[in-house]
Length: 170
Image 1 (cartoon, rainbow, N blue to C red):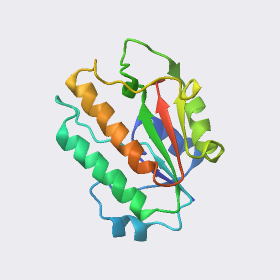
Image 2: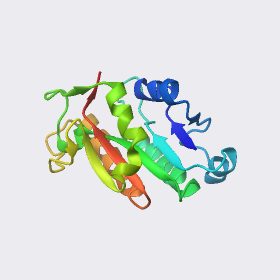
Image 3: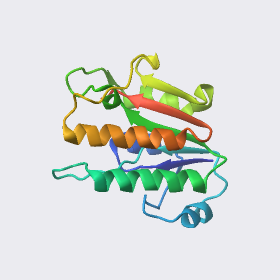
């Protein structure tokens, strides 16, 4: 069974509508046991949720700690599941200065075929990772975003995973 966490976002809504996974009712703050007991055996977790605010500052230590703790709880709740985690091009120090849009349909193919990319980081749209991580030139808001994603990537890497560093979604 595929469990989708983050079904209300732009990419999550498409995954939900196109593939009909089970959608999570829980949030990052939910306890491990709540996650574990709420769903039938989970084979794959599609993790597209993130913690940020609509108003400034969108990201800070509070959103960082909320998302990192939540991803850690989700991974502990489903230790035998394959985690498909959505990261970002921002970890390379790239923001809106370099745009490479990919459709939700094309991105969703990576979710469906994630086990073909087990324990890999995939740059979407490029394929295998092509750049070094460097967040030194980013604004503080973007640095928090990149640090959050990198910390969560480290958590996800402790089990079967596919990390998708998505550039831009059209």
